[in-house]
Image (cartoon, rainbow, N blue to C red; front, side):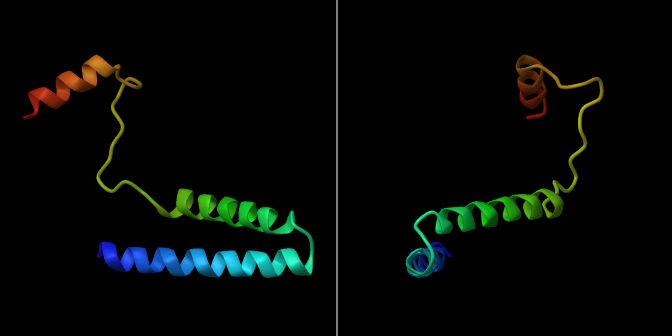
Length: 77
């Protein structure tokens, strides 16, 4: 699995570098940075909307402090 992820990472890096160089050559050097920023913003919105914690319910009464959360974790073991 990790080897396949590394292959995908290498392919993505190579294609991004070549695509960015082509876009920079055709327009100007700032355009690939703007394209990347737009893609990252789009992916952030998609991840925000589609990724959910299944089975997670927030605690009642607001956010517990760090000591209270640690005590609950240790008691559950």
